[in-house]
Length: 219
Image 1: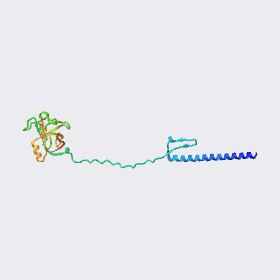
Image 2 (image 1 turned 45 degrees about the vertical axis):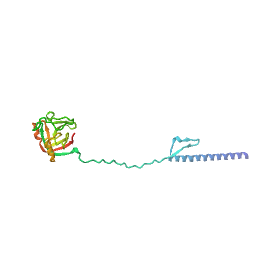
Image 3 (image 1 turned 180 degrees about the vertical axis):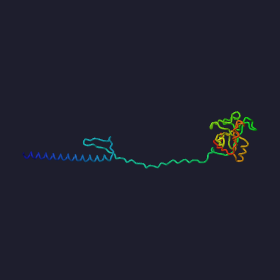
Image 4 (image 1 turned 180 degrees about the horizontal axis):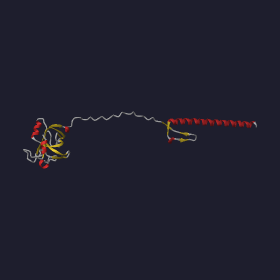
């Protein structure tokens, strides 16, 4: 082999080594960049729509993760309990007094038992013709009673607790001088109405210790 050929061979070998070193260096740089990009992916959100492929490696646009603010929990104010009015209602008035009874044909009566109060509809009421029970729109069929109308106006309903007759309801539709005089003395006196004085139950009504609990005041 002559010198000229050897020189060409050496030159070719050196060029090959230079090219090889350039390739190795390039691969090393690309590998390093790829590792850096992978590390960045771990700390950032990746937007797939922004990914762009290049001829030598995949370029990825990243966006920093936004920290979500956690609002402080505000204490929820508990609704205040409504104040309850403990004052007694007017409709809960309770009286203890005397009760008697009378019939439509009592002494001095007309025999018809025409009552002093008109009904809720403004009609006249007769014990003899209409009976001793009144049909009330709110309380149903209840007894009729006389009382002082200045204290217990027409249409007032009372629940009566009697030691013999038990509990029953009555509506104030009549009055009398005895009841008015009792009110003047600070007493309560009511008179239970019957269709006739001959009713045997009329004699078991009189009592001085009867409870009258007002359920409704007037019409």
